[in-house]
Image 1: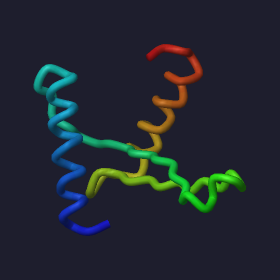
Image 2: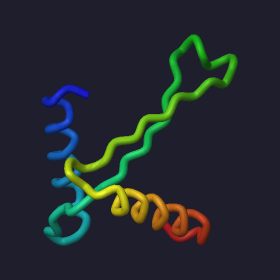
Image 3: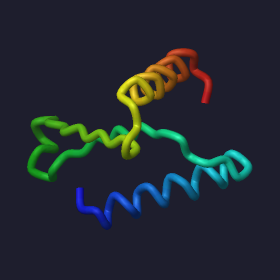
Image 4: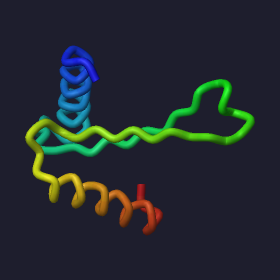
Length: 77
């Protein structure tokens, strides 16, 4: 990821978190995305991409992913 794209991603996440959580500041994030090229639609190949906040400890990313897993399993949105 280019430095410009990473900066834009960080800024977008910061703005979104502040907006959704009454001005809260981001202290970590885990982003997981899935994508497929148009030529892969028929064979159902999917690629995964993950990004984490700069200088975020590994255990924070694991905790965020686990928290999302628990939320999805419980059915709470």
